[in-house]
View 1 (cartoon, helix red, strand yellow):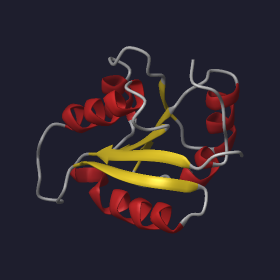
View 2 (cartoon, helix red, strand yellow):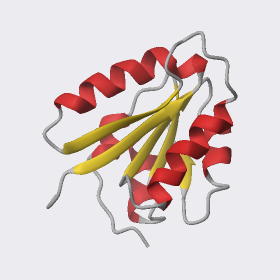
View 3 (cartoon, rainbow, N blue to C red):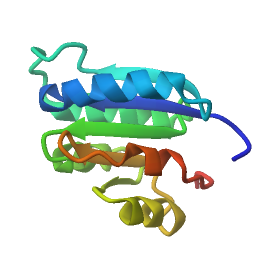
View 4 (tube, rainbow, N blue to C red):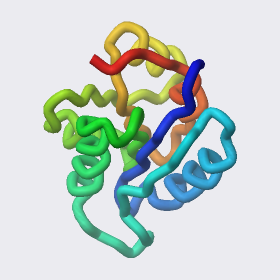
Length: 131
């Protein structure tokens, strides 16, 4: 990998506990240049998941972030919302092979995951150009 990743992380109240863990781990990772929190900012924030997913996806689409990691209860809703942003390819993936293929075969820049399934390291290890 030639450059460090700029990552935006978002989700919903169901994914907040894991989002907090991810952000702390990413901040310590030498492969990561920056980590931006797209929300929610507390577990009691009941704002619709789509708001935070779209906010994160827009940062990727504008070139402000290289990757978005989205966490909600299932990983499904945030992926659907992120895919509404032009130029963003979001996938829900719960295993390293799916994440690898989403990046290498489909040029995905956004990964959505459920709070209970933890495969973020594999996603960060994959690089691809953003088309």
